[in-house]
Length: 422
Image 1 (cartoon, rainbow, N blue to C red):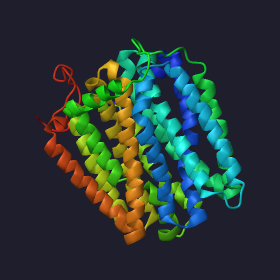
Image 2 (spheres, rainbow, N blue to C red):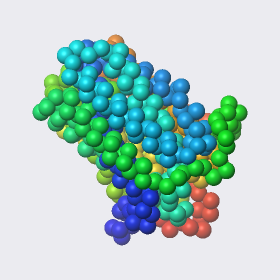
Image 3 (spheres, rainbow, N blue to C red):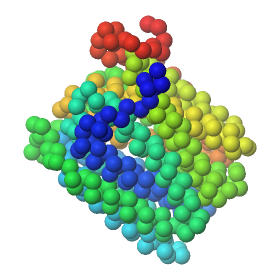
Image 4 (cartoon, one colour):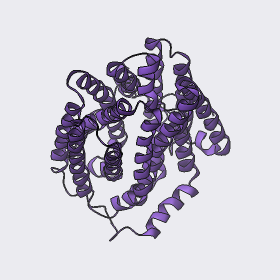
């Protein structure tokens, strides 16, 4: 019984190339998550302004808007291994540049924004190629387990990366964090160079406007995919107050980088627990309802976090609950997208997915920091959670196919729980 609830690691044992990719990415993720804490902390320490942190959101969002769709098309047109190598090498260079700037007493804010843009651009190039590569490295019957493992590596890094970054900042200063990032990304680079060629099957000779439009048209015409993107975009835009964590740590809890590290790590702790206990997810028949329930729980947890900002332990618990809800939603979303998207569209749909799923938090950062500058951090968190809940209700009402989605032949293979009866 317990084994059926635990994370399935069989893809790592059965597929050596996937194992190489997974291990390298797991190491590199620590560097990426450390940056997610170090850059906002550095900018807030330099300026004392929530709006200055919002500038990071603008830089990252610009990279997403400019590159997400072309990067998805590129992942369907060239050897994905080459894209992975280029992205990891670029991250090493960015980390070294950040380390040099961190040694300066008053580094130019514009250069920090430029490096944030560059880092985000490299992530945008990496993600579609990586996601489209996994089905090439894993047998079809193990693909769902591989998707959960990919989520697990991110969640573990979200716990360890910020916590380690906070300790390093407190003990040795910012340069030590960025130097460590360069080493971790170098490990990721070494891993992807060991992969075989990942040239797409039936690849096109290049990226054309028509091919990108085809991907957008597919999403618009497929209600399940469109509604999936909309509900998650709403959750990430309104209900993710990560950009406010430096403000909350300093001004609400009167803490330093250690408290900031706890705030950033708490959702990831919940996500790790949710991932480790995700074995039951594959047996849920109504996967669309799983997404809806998870988003509602996420919104409720964010609202509760906003109401408990006077007591750090309880606030951390609600952040952990939000993280668990998010990872369960991620697993259901990944399963639905794999079932609803043909292989020929995988890179382009992944590009659109990144634009929406990553662009949402960046817009959310901008919204949250702007509201916080006007009305305070607590009001920003509470209003964001309420808007997230309202948006989820509106999406479900507009697209009933999301809540009714189940895998093909679900009745024939139903051996586990149903979230609700039909």
